[in-house]
Image (spheres, rainbow, N blue to C red):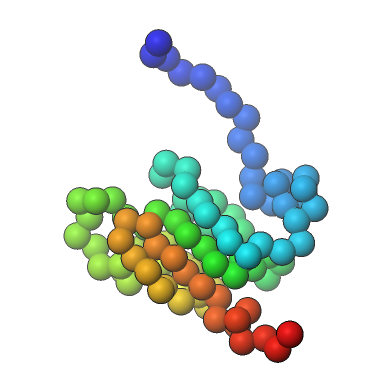
Length: 100
């Protein structure tokens, strides 16, 4: 059956508040083209995931992994790109350098 269905959207901030999330070790985003919008909405001063896995390019893109809008955004927030194919993994090195 083809057609459209309206669904309620919920923001990243709403999820954090609703479930009283205090810390995120791994944030995996796969929302069919909305990844960048979600990443742009995150206040990285309030909630800083240690690791972020997200789609950064399509199979047919000829963009270098360091030049994708997602990579540029997350690098500007202090994350390091450690793996890239279609999905990329970024880590926050500051969180791994803390003494326990």
